[in-house]
Image (cartoon, rainbow, N blue to C red; front, side, top):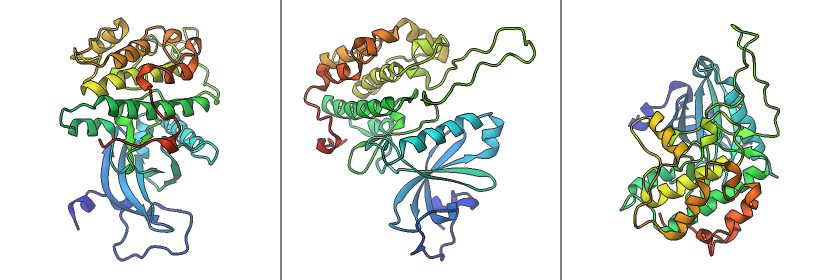
Amino acid sequence: MDEDAELIPENLRRPADEPASTSKKTPTSIKDYNVIKEIGEGSISTVYYAKEMFGDRREVAVKSCQKRRILRDKLVDAVMREKNILARLSTAENMHAFVVGLYCTLQDAETLFFVVSYAQKGDLATIIQKLPEKRMTFEQSRFYSAELLAALGHIHSLEVIHRDVKPDNILVKADGHILLSDFGSAKDRTLPEKEPQPDPKNPDGPRKRRASFVGTAQYVTPEMLQGKEADETCDFWALGVTVFQFLTGKHCFHDESEYLIFRRVQELLYKFPDDFPATAKSLVEALLVVEPSERLGSAAQGGISSLKQHDFFDGVQWDPSKTRSPVC
């Protein structure tokens, strides 16, 4: 057994001499996949590269979530929300070339499995670190930012807000195009919000605040830090932070602790390097605005069409079928 196979948990292993099915069309068990190696890890999940053992033997990613961890961390609602959002984004009428697709969900006694699209080249955060200067060229940053914006526009049209946009969650397929992934922090505005619940120890006291902090410190918005509800402009703020990271290889909001990072976010304490492209600077400044309604892309500022018309995106082909990927 090779080193990668030794790292595969027993419940994911398939007997080496078990043949692939020639008649099966729908998976019923994780054993219908040949789980090959680990490719990522989260707080309650591990992601594996796998192949279907039926049909066309398609390459997939399997996100394995331990049920005991989900229960321990009280994440049942969050996991179910992610499943439902992915399922809605993966229907024939809602699927998009730049958004990860959910093929199926499976489970055994201990584990919940999400079987999703596989991106052969990994995530952009890792890709950036492998570039010669550990940052993108202007053309590369514009290309990937445009595909990210196209993905965001699509999910927003379906009333889904991602809320954790960052290079780590932007995957790259073999053809060089992106997949926006990881909807664990996402919000579906078509679903009713749970009403804030009173504190059981003080039923007459104030109810727990409706909004809660989600996402990643370096990409979080001022309004989320203030406990306010986030709308789609929180994804545009994160787009601005991401463009900065594409072009510099660094976070625009960075400090020694989350507390200090949050202070920088709320006070807009960041600085452009001298060689930062002027059109990219204009875009980032238009997105990193404390008041959500004043951000480029907000309804008050002309919606996403105004964002697409910014000079930074000059020459971009917004039709996915007409775009070509730069080598990154």
